Image (cartoon, rainbow, N blue to C red; front, top):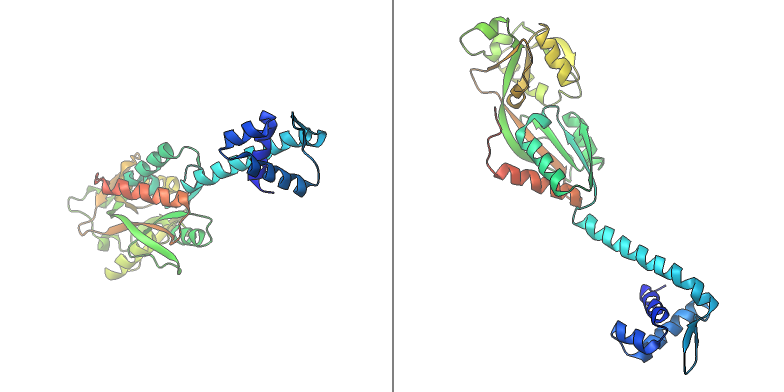
Length: 303
């Protein structure tokens, strides 16, 4: 059924006059009459009783009118929803992020700005490791992923990665630890035979790989005393004296009692990457644009 026929019908039903209805529609009367007849033929019923002196709705027309009005309202609503979704003003955004992601000012600013700019978009946030996010983006459970990797992430076909920022890995250790008290900055080699607390899989994927590669360059295999799945557990174990850990510099903003932070003598860079499918949803594209604009603002993100 042509929606135009419904609009023509409702104009005539409101005016009870073909001439006035045609004038409101901006057409001449003969085409209007023809369209109403086409609608009646399609339905197989008469909607109007017409005489030379008056027009009135039949019983079928009287009952048809409110349903026709609802159909047009629903069609208009559907069209409006489609336009809003195209402009990313409604919908959902599936966003994955590494554990340290929310502590990176760039990410925090982008999230705040996105929520302010698109208040009706449902945000679905998932804290996941690198490999989980890659799979989530590949299967479109996530629109965007924010991962850590010391190199460009290896991604399936159809996905892209863009470096958001680079920052240093630093050592977080108990305040009474020998490396915390030493005047010289620590080196990776100083961690040989040192019991360490590290992220376990899957959260440590990427970050831990990088640290293991640095240890291999220094000629040793790190000794893992405990594995943690959450940031709170990781720093809690360090504070309790179970051993040092490696964190991104942005996480030094977290002040935990009995924990100190030391930069390495030689830089140990870590990179934060934005990953997504080549074809992004409108909400995904809106967030990508938001975070890249925040990055372009040039404000410092490292502690």
